[in-house]
Image (cartoon, rainbow, N blue to C red; front, side, top):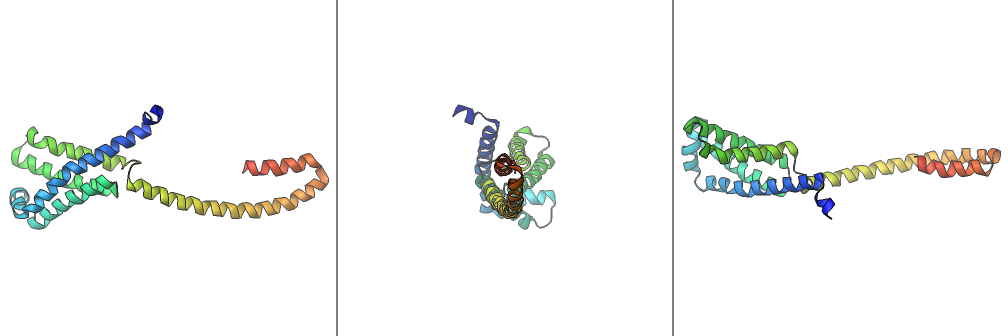
Length: 188
């Protein structure tokens, strides 16, 4: 039990799960705060950057934080959600630098969100995610198709081998017959 917990893969996947869920849970309320008063957010954060369509971009920021957070929490399209958060937080970091300079008290939370989302985007969601379940299902379907093809090929090959084995048993004796039948299944 302890060796399973201490394996590198299990520890990494657990760390990614914790990072995803906590980052998503803590960040999601920022998106809801933006939606609560979208005009105020546009006036305070988007218009000072002189970006076009401040209300539209405010909605984009809010929904990328809400949607990205849910994607992180669930582990569904995780890298896409993490990249949405990285984009929004990058603009927030730029805004903080332009309006307040290098103020570490203002930047520290933004940099932690940026580092968390970037790490998740680069490493992926880990095994404890819906993405991994989808990959495993698709992989097993692909493996099933490969197995069916292998069985068809092996059946055709075995039919040809059995004909040649019957000819060789008449010539070589019981030892060659056993070797051909027993070793042919294990060597493939």
